[in-house]
Length: 217
Ligand SMILES: Cc1cc2nc3c(=O)[nH]c(=O)nc-3n(C[C@H](O)[C@H](O)[C@H](O)COP(=O)(O)O)c2cc1C
Image 1 (cartoon, helix red, strand yellow):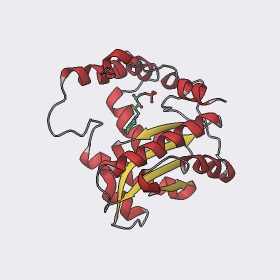
Image 2: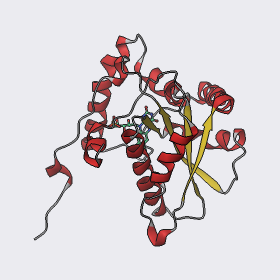
Image 3: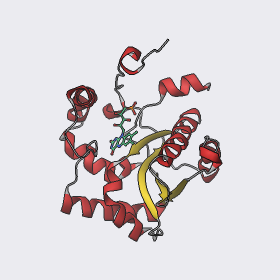
Image 4: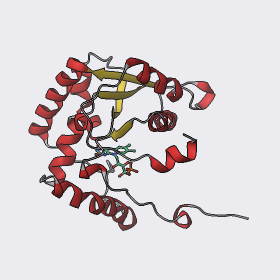
């Protein structure tokens, strides 16, 4: 698969087959994640791969803490988002909502509980960065995550980035015995997509390139 097809076809997948991903496959996609560029080649990203009984233990804990605190998916900004961004987010929700209704679930519940359980994917990836890095280095982590998502796509695997779980960083740190020096920035579900699930059967749109690029000449 060429890089353009991987970019075009990738989407966030929220229903997975009960089919394991081999260690060799996981190692291969991480090989590519590690090829991302980074400032002065710091490679500040770190990945914790959780599967099997450890993943079940992590999901149990996340579901429990979510039931107590009910943090919802949001932009994480201190002030409300301007309309232009709210519209983009609304359009994505509107594309997904009918598909979630088809499987008889309530939208917010599906997203929040699904995020906490990595949507039933066989592999949960926790992305961390050492807290000593300034926020600009989080950009490097994002680049590596992009490489990871595209490598998975090229291998016929599916992913969903999950920001919600970073709200439960303390619990994840405790369950997986991660050093306090590391910040949990993202979760990623990894597995084989269930092609029959309606929730995988929609594509989010993107704004026109004219809305996001500005020419100076
Ligand atoms: C940093 C980040 C955090 C995200 N967090 C969540 C999440 O917590 N739960 C979820 O279901 N999807 C999450 N997503 C997936 C986005 O909703 C999705 O990327 C967006 O709607 C565009 O759709 P697409 O990935 O199918 O192209 C996240 C994506 C990113 C990049």
